[in-house]
Amino acid sequence: MKEYFKGRIDARTAFNVDVPGRTPQLPQILARGGVKHLFISRFKEGFFNWYSPDGSKIFTYSPGNYGWAVMFYKYFDVDAPTAMHKLHEVLKNWNGYYASRNIPPHYAVVISNDASGPVYYDRVLKEWNRLVEDMGISVPRLRYTTADQFLDAVDVPQARIDSISGERPDLWLYIHGPAHYEAIAAKRAAAVDLPASECFNSIAGLLDGQWSVYPRSLFDTAWYKSIYPDHGWGGKHGDITDSIYRSYLETGDSIALATLYPALRRIAAKVAVKGPASVVVFNDLSWQRDALAVLPVKDSLKQYVVRDSEGNTVPSQSIMTEEGRGIAILAKKVPAVGYDTYYLSTAPEPGSPIGTGEPVNGYENAWYRISFGNGGIRSLYDKELGQELLNTTRYAGGDVLDLGYDGLDAGEFTEITPPNMRNFDKLSNHEANWRRTSDGPVLTIFENRNRLGSDDIIERIIVYRQWKKIDFEYELPNWKGIRSRQLSFALPLNMSAADIRYDVPMGMAAVHGTELSMRPGGWAWDGTYRQKPEEIHPGNHRIL
Image (cartoon, helix red, strand yellow):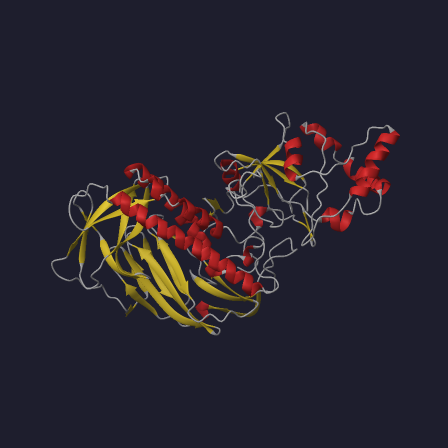
């Protein structure tokens, strides 16, 4: 912001007042970026130090709702005496709050509303201040101010500000992933690929000294495009807006990848390899990591053997990806922000896939004993725990529920509208035809092609052989986008407590673990936000 506006402005306050949600890492992101304050609403009125998991914090202010002063309270719509009377009733309720926390006695009246311009209150402001002078009593004066100026005045070292932390799950989740899947998928990809590209371009510059090729202008463009969409999805002519947003997000990720791979090749060129046909696998995270890696191969007809840097044979398997055929391995203990090297050689004789395409109804590996059936997994027995993990009385593990949904994607509601059972169906109502489509020493893929309503659905369950992990994937090749319809994934766990985690920007969140502990408060047209964050679940458990 500073560079774009050539120093004419600073960027010290983040202003994000409408969305009733807050990711737990935002305070750390803002604090690291030099932002001092966060201005929100649809949250309890007051001042807070909002902490991130690493201990960093951001001074946060909420007026309760960003538009209430203009739409309902209308303090300055008549004259100064009327404004004094209205504000007196408000301010006397804040005396104790300010005094107990040693906060300087400055109060903000937020002049804000949807699609509104500036309002001229000069007449009332001057009349108010003239009355204060004429009466000679201790009455606050009025003055215009900005968010920066107001928050600077109250954010002082001696103030004792309430501390809060954790995620406020987004009540408007339907407007993002579910309603704009391709666009948000590109945004999520850019959130991984752009930091990785910046990191490895920096490392490449340190290694070869070629800082002149550091793609700074491309990074600026990519970040601009990857964060361009804001509070404007849908709406009037929303198909145009949404297509622009999607295009920007996809371009941002494309630039990230176009700058990442040249940097990786520059680094790989510096690696002292022990032989030909070497492949360098990089880890962009700041901790040691095990992960599936797919090594590219040029000749799709040959069979390959993979060895690690010590010459040990690594279990590998030929798989198909969107880019073509590759060799999958489990890359183990790849160092933090580092790499490991693997070597490919052709196998002496071609191998053959193990039982691919054949019908199956069960599978067993070192960790699990699995039974397949209509809708997904009918039994998932954990050998280490000696326990059945699923209760499939009503739904299969990985079942797909076809539900009705009459709620909004974003709006003035204070709780997510639960789906309904109108025209309810589920994948487990339909006869399954499970087949093993890929098998080898790394992973096994099971696939069920079926139909749910008017749509084909491809259900894949991927079981890993060297990793205690199962992935569920779904493909809707001819999705028709019927209104007021929702497909939900079901995993009916047979346990009283489970550790369920999901990714958030620059971090991970845990259900019933990292949520904000307080009720958010604040106001919407439908009332106040009383629901505790730990009770917020997309789809809502009243049906499941």
